[in-house]
Image (cartoon, rainbow, N blue to C red):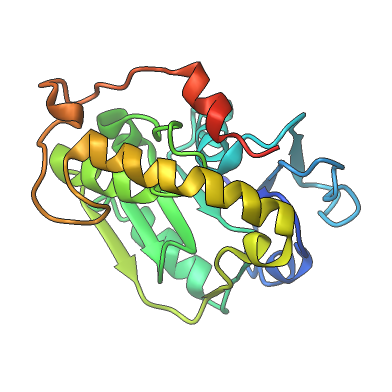
Length: 224
């Protein structure tokens, strides 16, 4: 089998600690959502950089990797503020390739493996979530579709929302978008984020894959 795809969405900050901690051969893909193309002087020459004209957000970045490389058996997707502990990527790949689990994460989903079989059953991530709550939404959809998910513990670290903490303009944008993402989750599932109960289908529609594309909603959430 060829080297696995490791995709890192990037907006701002220091990407070097993440890249320097990769301890296995991978096909590195960086989705550069930064306004100035900051990653070009940082990533290795053999990496593939997708230079976006605007910030499409984390959720759309996940889908972009899947859509642009649809023949992969699975994809590894991380965060730019993740630092991989030695051996954690190998363990993640081993579990993802095991065939008995569709979505495997390390610690708090700082890095995860998502199989093509899982996406075929569950679908793409819901891009009505710009940055947040899309993982909780996908957890729920996996559970309802009978796709097994698993979190393994390791020493990988994830700064978590490092961009928001370090860039006031993105913190302001997040204060605008995050409450709407939470409200959308509650509308979609009838319960707060990561709560039990609620609807068995999105919006209680009876259609397990029901999603209404709404361009005006995406425009409202998009960070500028």
